[in-house]
Amino acid sequence: MTVAFGVAATIVLVILSPFALRELFAGSAVDWPLLSNIGQTYGAVSALLAAGALALLGFSVALQAREVRHAREQAARTAQFELMRVMLDDPVYREVVGWSARDGLAPDDFRRDLYINLLLNWWRMRWEFKDMSEAEVRYAARGDLFSGNAGRDYWRRRGEARLSFVANRRARRFEKIFAEEYEAAVAAGPVGPTPARSEAARGAASRRAGAAVVALGAGAVAGMAWRVLARRARGG
Image (cartoon, rainbow, N blue to C red; front, side, top):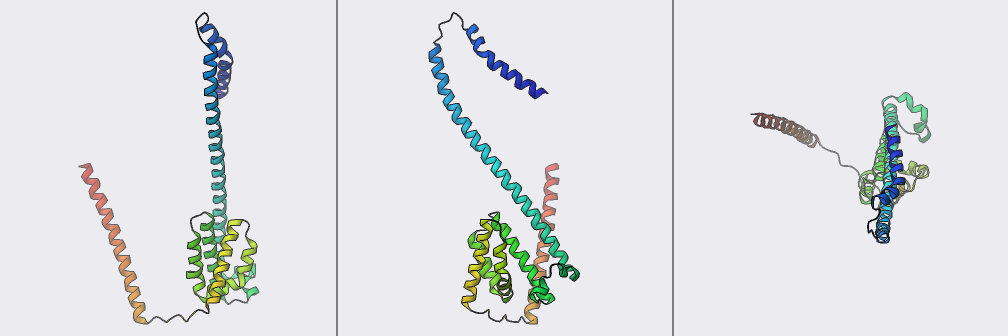
């Protein structure tokens, strides 16, 4: 109600302003044509400012629409990740999609396929949000996924289907990058055997991981103690 009253009062003031100015400057030597020219000059500037404000408004609306779309996509991907996790935890739900039966996958291979699918969808979400450059996507394909037989086997069976399911141009570009890197990996030859790690190497790696955890914990404790001492010093 208050807003409507303010708008109505503003409109009335604008309508009555010429009459008020005529009464205010009646009998005075005012060069009205000159003032009119000056007003027209400011009117052109006002039009430019209004056009700029309209452009900024359009940009803001487009940006908000993009953020809403990203939020919806992220929510959908989160729901997909949760469904995949349930399928990984309980073998009963694997019969719903028939993925393992259709491709003749063993249980371990089925879980590996699900993990690769989740990993690819995560990379693609980062790519669509422009958090991942094309160079990073190609490195993820060449240096990570297709450096082993599991990734190559997955793409041989599912790559064409993934490319046919995409709904926008940027997602299609992501899938094409992986398809190109897959062809390059196959042309480069088979993957070499992975060297087995000895018990000593595994023990050394375990000790390094334990030391890193201890160091991280010690650093966190030291940081908390420093903040407490600093707070006390400021309070004193």
